[in-house]
Image 1 (tube, helix red, strand yellow):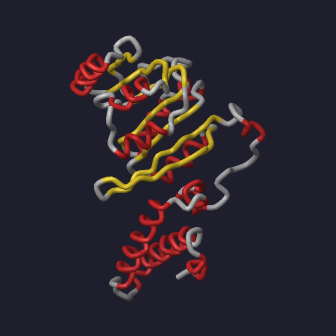
Image 2: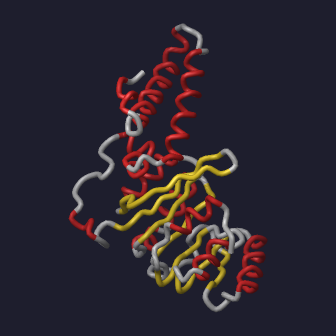
Image 3: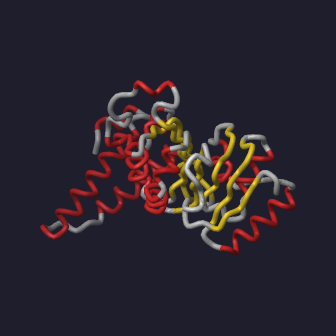
Length: 244
């Protein structure tokens, strides 16, 4: 099973597990890959729409995994029972939707050891929500595909591993929530490209923003975003520590 760059990044974050739940599985490509590579013994593949789920069933059958991958029509994780899945995978949807699905199914989330998430928006909010649910961001990856940037998160339950003595927030700085501590401290090259592009975009907007009291608020907001971008870039190159 050949995956897209984004889907492969998501699949690579899944730790070997008894049962994974691929929520919003679409055509079940990740589910099939997990079984084909012996990462998951079983997978629960869910989708809110019957059309994609029917294609998923056919793909699963052709791959020879009908005995290991079960499909369920489900709004989010509503068709999953607490304790059924050790790992929950939510990718290819907005961050707000990911947060809603998780908060609507807290008993299921409470029994999971790992969350593998790839929010297409509201990444910062997703990081906050993960922490509030009792998880920490163990690792993150960032990929660029067709000119778009995607963040993929590996979140682990606090107390399930050596982090059981964790006290306080792992993300001490706003820049960690915005751009990802792991990505910054590991100097992720894809994040660096994204930050350089964002710096240029914000700078161009500021340069062409008219002077006046009516633009004072937007200007301060843009300057704050640019300052945070410079702080993030300083992890890659010390010259950015001077700020804007």
